[in-house]
Length: 465
Image (cartoon, rainbow, N blue to C red; front, side, top):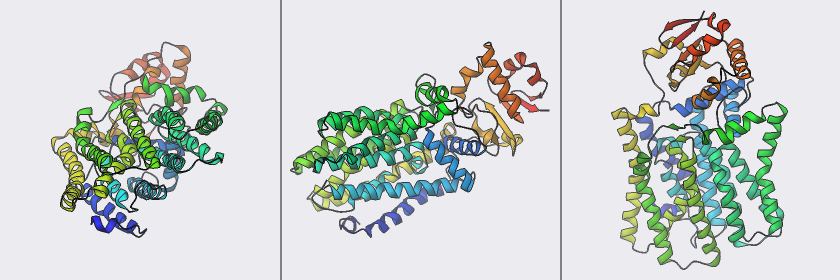
């Protein structure tokens, strides 16, 4: 198989497509449940299709461009998880092909081949949620586009302003998809000055490109009188309030130990066995910095999940590919390749199988059971973390992200805050309110008109009369 992908032939991408399908089959057979973030994405798309604006009519910290994609998907296909998977598959295939193409174009390796594409395909099956249409996946697509522009600066110094502007623009668009990708702002400045040799005018142009998408979105929210909400929810709030820890950092360490060991081995082999050109040395330095900054995104994300690591895959593929390109001992190279080919996906399969069998997947998946049947085809507002009530229901009211909503809902002693809460319940009138922590019960003491509209059906569950 390794020799098949060593040829520089675009038709090798058909082999990549085939491998993508084959490696995905075990995840289909494992019947992975609907994930809480996936349900959040669909609820946001549905609510935006009803005319509500992100941050103003939906309290969540999702990137505005990601929300826009989910809105468009809902308009086209509704709440179709399959459509989300297909769209994610298209993005993954694009990333794999594009990364391989720019590594060939800018002579990252002496031998042009599709080995980096093969390696990246295998890495995408390390975790089942790499295959979801996450904001991190969408944002990382533009990070890769920016990375290609930085690679172009290592092989030629151009006087044209377009490539410099595009570097900043692509990183800025990535930020608007997924806020943790803001870590690439200092990366961009350091790489631009130290490796790409940007002068002051080029750096200013690059920064103008970077802040252009964010500025245009800020102008839109200023226009609809939602700038404060946009800045607070998207940029600041999730660094101040509690995040969602779907998996532990220990789980992430176990899952990524094996692939990172291959990355380290590839780095050592490339350093010891290959004499790099000046341009390749710059590319090597660029990827080292890229991986270091990519790791930071994991720790500033508000949702602790494996898919936050998807942005690091191009760097891992770059170094791991060097094992199969530069290692001369055929027997050892072949052994390492097949251990990699079967070991990386198997790590992901076994990890999620263990989570499902032990029930630990419940912290990540949407809850199931007869208790959620009462909200079927109803409009619901859950004041808590149990997303199961939304599975076959629609969100009523802006308070989707409970950790972000809680401070506002507890602001009932403030007259403007209470007025805003009153207006949201009066206008939306959710058929069910799931009150996990007693917040709604407290609010009803201050809102007698709303209290008259609801009856306590059972503990923590209020039904519209």
